[in-house]
Image 1 (cartoon, rainbow over the protein chains, first blue to last red):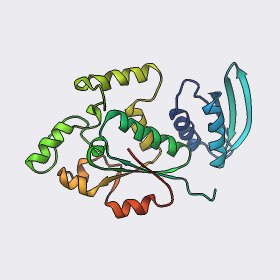
Image 2 (image 1 turned 60 degrees about the vertical axis):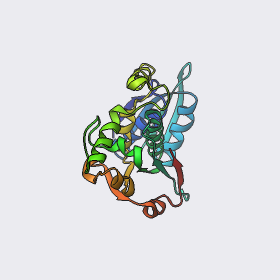
Image 3 (image 1 turned 180 degrees about the vertical axis):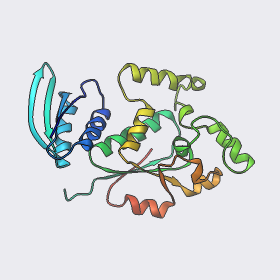
Image 4 (image 1 turned 90 degrees about the horizontal axis):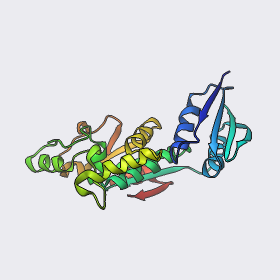
Length: 74
Length: 159
């Protein structure tokens, strides 16, 4: 079981979703992916679509200003 | 998830900006769990040619001439203000500068996310192209009936 990190704060649609999806596909069951993302579209939809695809959203934390961390487990 | 999430795009335009729209929607939809099909027809076929620049490909004199003029994915013209091919280069530079994915990145993302590429049989016939003229990711050569079957139950866009 490993923990990975992904920063998509500099990405724009659709690469926010694309990079998340490509990372999620690499995970083994139990692995954790911590994603840093911006509020707005990424925060609203990245965790939502991960949950729809069967991943578990463990927590969402405000890091600073408009940057959030979402912790996802396979 | 009872509803079927599927997006099918008919890519007819060979304009740089419209092809960007095709691959933005395709990669984004695939990333959020949609099954995505793109049906390339007429000028849309330029974006899936193996040759990405101007080359005399295809069978028949007129077809080879046409394919040379049309070129491939790396010389698509902007639909407005093309300025002899300068604008797509400037636009790509602006997109990079603003951290927005370029056409090549969106195209690669679509391939990585296993978007299904199909080529239109009739347009290929007119332009003298065969499946070998296209990238290997092109799954099949189809006609209207097969495309309708594939897109059934999902959303369809014409770009």
